[in-house]
Image (cartoon, rainbow, N blue to C red; front, side, top):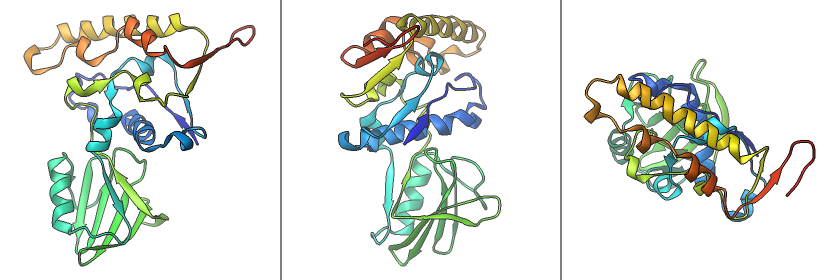
Length: 239
């Protein structure tokens, strides 16, 4: 599959940052990397650019621990599902329309995961998952039936100590295509400077992580590419 990994469009210090449209796209990529086996990874391509690689991301192990896979025909009491959604920060609403929301109507649970651009509809019969589907929140029509749904909460603002360099999420046999490493380092220095200026303007700094806790440094980013096969392009390709 082909995936796009964009840079966040909002500052992490923006109180409305959870409405960042790129947040869902970034989480989709991280979820795909955390759930893809080495053999499956060979068919996965990710397009990105230096600015997108600078913010630290939730590591694969933490992604796996904080996501919930709901499979058709498995046992899942609706109370257990609702409790998990509330504990992981989902808000209960009448109808879901954006990531981070869920609704319950009888034995039907709609969940808008941060790892999907469309919400899931989970239908339960008693404590058994009868069907899993993705649907359009505008007209409520089914897009596709699924064998399982992977529910991902908003992990972008979680414990900064558990976040990692983006390159640490890639499989060991990944190949990195790039023009030059210096562009990655330059992007890191630029973002650190800009975020530092935003941090200096904050009131109540103790309530916010520092830029160094949110971003990868130029040295750490370039070091993160070590061990991977790299293909450089410019006037001609070289490995």
